[in-house]
Length: 132
Image 1 (tube, rainbow, N blue to C red):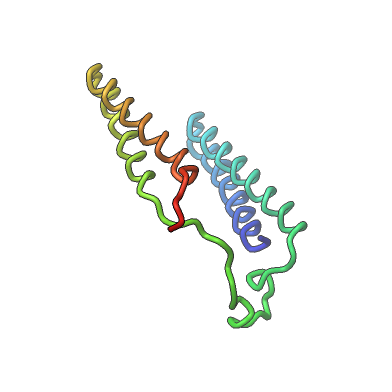
Image 2 (cartoon, rainbow, N blue to C red):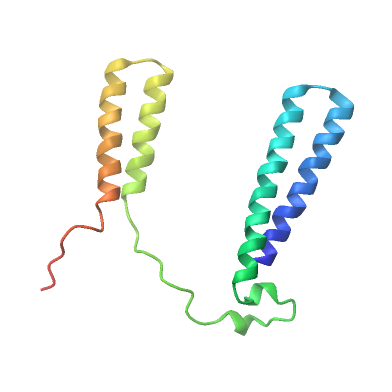
């Protein structure tokens, strides 16, 4: 996690430097606030990764002298694929377009599709399975 924290800390410095240069050159408040908030959010993520890296054991990615073989082995458990997120993205896009073009009938239909997809995603792995 040290590599990730370094990346976000470098991004934080870059965003704050960009905000200072932008403030000096343009004096436009919206861009200054946007760049400063982006730097602050990057600082939050980098700080979180820094604290997490103290609690974890050293990974091969954190060792500059590591070999490729050091990262071999089991990488952990990854849940099987699911098609519900595709439907969830479709429902969200339908709701957004319905609201953008203000079609009340489409808002109702797309909200029902979205709720159905959320329910399917939430209860996907909790269905009883028969082991025959």
